Amino acid sequence: MTAVITGMGLFSPVGRGVAATFDALTTGKSGLARPPEGHPARESLEVAGLLPPIDPRTVASGPETKVLDRIVVLALLTAADALADAGIEVGRDVDPARIGVIVGGVGGMSTLETQVVARAARGRAAVSPYLLTGILPNMPSARIAIAHGIRGYSSAVGTACASGAQSVADAVRLIRAGEADVVLCGASEAPLFPTFADTFGNARALARGWDDPTRASRPFDTRRNGFVLAEGAALLVLERAEHAAARGATAYAEVAGYGATTDAYHPTAPRPDGAGAAECMRRALAGGGVSAGDVGYVNAHGTGTKLGDIAETTALATVFGAGGVPVSSTKALTGHLLGASGVVEAAACALALGAGLLPPTYHLDDPDPDCPADHIRVEPRATGTEFALTNSFGFGGQNVSLLLRRTAGARAAGPRR
Image 1 (tube, one colour):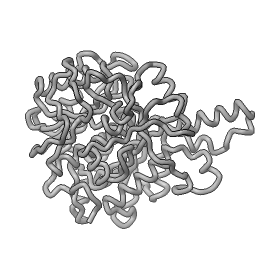
Image 2 (cartoon, rainbow, N blue to C red):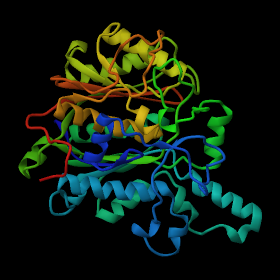
Image 3 (cartoon, rainbow, N blue to C red):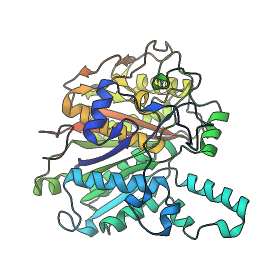
Image 4 (cartoon, one colour):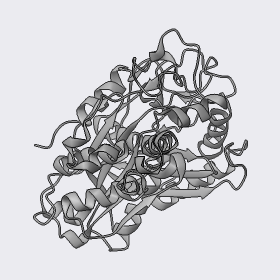
């Protein structure tokens, strides 16, 4: 069975919604800035990918809103956006038992930190009885299911920065196995709080020392000195192609294949030879029944760390040959949304295929000679390619690649007509 993308809910530092996102990625609108006065991570982060403040009462009510983690709020907002974009109302357009929801991410750790600090300061009585439903990893999926009456498969994925892409791969499996007609899948992340930021800062993994924060994320550039931590959520509506056709829906793209492997090498560092990543990409190509030469674009994991950029470039050369495929990293504008990055980037691939326009890696002024590739730089590149690949790699050696295929009459980057 074929799985197609019929809806997108995107909320990242470059904007909310399909049109705003693709416009930013193709015009160079950065979502990176210094945390403002009063932001909880201002002392921990020089630069971040920020979203505006969101009142939890926009999606919930009652005393639990005081400890409703931001990941849940973002997941609920993007789920509603994705379903509306797909033109789906559960119970009207899809059987509630035939729609699933899979949301990945790190979990509600900012709420946990706040509650631990409160208990340390004021004792046991300071701990909210609603704490658990604020921090459990499955709460984004569960809350979405409750809000929309979804009674099919539901789960949470925790494969670090690969979790969003893994959620999409799992959704494809459900549809291909005939277990669901529709699956909401993706990730929600809210990592901009002190302890989480400090662990990366103390490891010297974050970009630093930039006068212009909008240029701090520089994948594959010789001057890069770390990634930019960002928050956001992205959910896709994956649908069985026949189900979509029966209700007259037009797809953005098909998820034609996926690959998932594990490096089995190191808790944080990638394999220097990129072997695990290369095998992951090969599996995605095999799953879609295409050769490397059929792929005309790769949206790289490309976070802007030296080890990661070089290992991924090595893997790309193994699969496609040196400079054998156009490559870019949209994290130059969005920053690194951890698990949600892979879903934003899958959406970017789908929209690029439909528009025939590949987003560049902005701020790639001086490509690292250790990362030789056909880098798309400075401005978007026109394309007629049918296939694009996106990579997501996570701590623990988690590798996921998604293969996207342009569909006939693909939807443009705009609201559903």
